[in-house]
Length: 623
Image 1 (tube, helix red, strand yellow):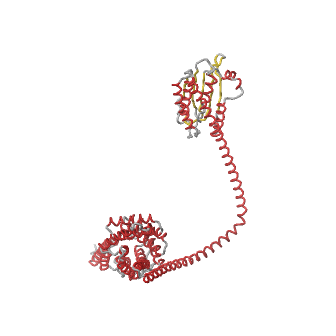
Image 2: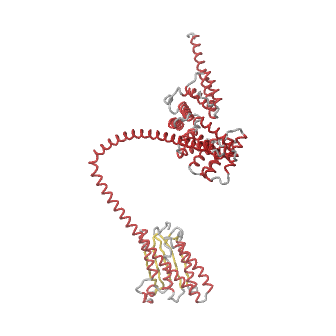
Image 3: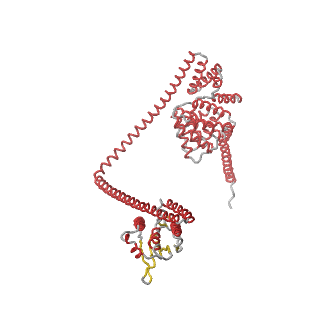
């Protein structure tokens, strides 16, 4: 057994201690980094800076920690952030990393606050947005800055006069504020949307947004938000409604009262004084407002202040000063317009240069494609012509067939509607004849009953007038009503019976009033000439594909009836002719055969009645 070396044992213990110390350090750094990120989420730059300084004493600052230190300075409005970010550039960090996000976000805010060209800081904003959208490793404080990016983009386009694009990004910012449940920023974006809608002349939408901002600010106890919303509502009142009731004054005054109670600055503080006739005080406030605007190079606010000064001078009858103030107002207006024109011109020039490059590249690609196309053109032309002629012939043939089929269907539908329109008056005429007979024979009770049934029949006819098919049950009910009327007419000398052989009467469909002419013929030509009490049996049977309807009576028989009606022997019954026309339409529509037969029933060589057999296709579809 070899002796254990003390030096080797000491070295192993030293390694183990180093590893443990490294793990503890990393764990401690991870906890501290989490606390720093939480401070950023709460916008607590002071606490974040304290934690970063602690980490700096324990370890050398990494580039990420340096940028977090710059971000802390930015939150504290300490310009030392600039010396840190100037150490890096666009290519210093991996895209989608937290350091990449911090660098581009800090630069975008810095350039915007420095009133640099919009194209310069828009570059950094778009890169920040891309990082937020594509990275899955950013902490919560970074992803929450998506709201700020959209809000800043909206500001850029508003400053250049492009309120349409500004509105687009402001709505995205509003959606993010709602997603993050950030009431303060919901109020802020609502107020800004109101300003854009007011500039666009969308006064109702502007009013809704200002009211939303005011309600949220009051719920949060945000006096600054309340003052802004009240002032903007006052401006909207003057712009949209000409302030007929002087309502804007009460809004401005309320905003000023809140500002004075809480020692806050009110951008529209001169307005109440101007409305109350305190022109000298309002003039002093407008002059102070002008100085502040000039210090911050804010030409828009400077223009507004100068216009207020001009109004004060005008009210004080200091017309020379008023004229000079108006001239200064026009100067600011021209400068703003010129800035906008210059910005737009540079943007157009930049786009044009890019367009020229893309045009040259596209032209080279087109020339190459054109050369290849010419090489194939000779071989393809012939086949293209053949295909074109073939397609033209096929399409023409299809269109012709379609038109022919459409015309045929329309003609058949017209014929069927004509037959039905002839059937309904024919049926009503026969029914009225029954009622007339009852009244003439002074059977008034039966006449009243028959009128009720007649009304029901008319209603059914009206309901069925636009239906191609009705359930078999409704057809049977209509036939029963018709037979009841005939029974009343002939003093119950006629009886009838229906048999349906367990059919599903609601599922099977037939054309309305199809069977009534058969019953009418049984009564008119079979039963009435007979001395026996009339009996009519109507039965319905079916196999898999057909419905068989049989109407059988005990009258004088089909041949005897023809002999009695010698004047009509060569002319078919009107109802039967209509029936046959409708059967023909059914065959064309459903591509199934139908049949109609009349048989004479005999016994010992004598006629004992007539049987009419109607065969129809089973139709189970909706009309």
